[in-house]
Amino acid sequence: ARRALGGGGADAHEPHLQTRIRGEIRLIPLREVHYLLADAKYVEVHTAQQVALIEDSLVSLEERYPGHFLRVHRNCLVAGSELVGLRRSGGIVQACLRSGVALEVSRRNLAQVRRHLRSRV
Image 1 (cartoon, rainbow, N blue to C red):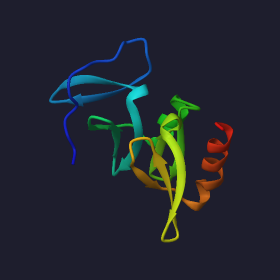
Image 2 (cartoon, rainbow, N blue to C red):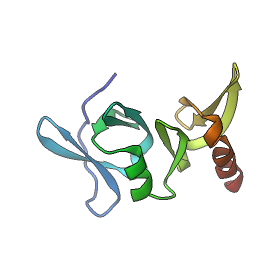
Image 3 (tube, helix red, strand yellow):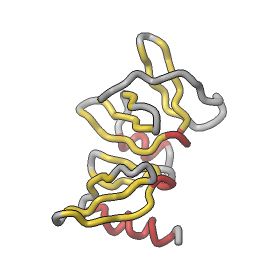
């Protein structure tokens, strides 16, 4: 379910994503973002409290915040700090996040995700 971004703001000096809700611009601190999911022409920004929509592409977000997000699938970026492991379920490999969310990892991105996890040990 999509919910409007709640209250709270970000320090203008810390990295953030910007969304517009009912004509009002809201800032989402990058440190609060768990993952980003492409949905048609929008990107869903998933945090612990909400899902917000932004009009950026995953590629532009990857380029703007190098090292912060890890591509796990063509339609999904995960905050590297949120990734805690991998699991295989019915032939599909999933990235496990601190929040308990599991997201499909494509075969193309699996080696990169494994390298990221090994580098943190």
